[in-house]
Image 1 (cartoon, rainbow, N blue to C red):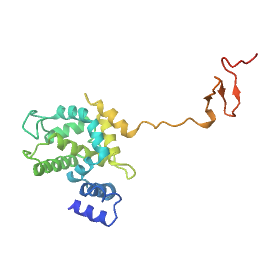
Image 2: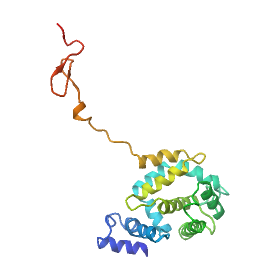
Image 3: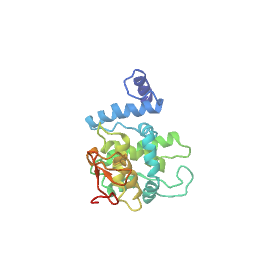
Image 4: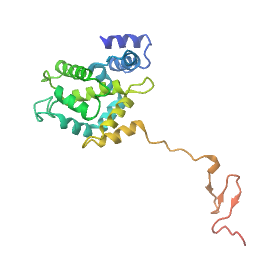
Length: 232
């Protein structure tokens, strides 16, 4: 239903950029521009697993998750049970209790209530049950864990002026202190503090080497240099 609303709003040009990328982009635009800000004002969770999945499909978010894969997998396995199970639980699965331990360990419980985390866990599990072959009640796979991270990030780091990738990067930076999750820090900082583009130095400090080996100053006069013949 939310996807249909997003498509309708995009066709009416109410959501910037939503119509360009199809249904997923329309849903992501609806969540980012309408539902998440509304939820922040009302203090309620409005981002569901479908919305989180649409955000994961955004190119900048997908790239961030790709760069964070190793650290996220290490973090997931620390709380997972029964690894090497049939798909979708080859990396193991989380239980509701595992989600609670994770939240306590990374100090999320001060910002999201246990009831809120439980709703996110249940939402992601139900999404998997309806969309993944072999998924079962009460178990959260690694892919469901990724959805949960997006939901958590949009809840605790959302501001209207920033993007979902920035929200997620802020959360990953916090999680990077966990054992074996150092890779999350470098991936997050590439979003939060991207490398500066090379630029020309200010004109006031520009120096260029003259053809005769001297240095031409700002005013254009040749300054003496090695081999310039000064003092002859």
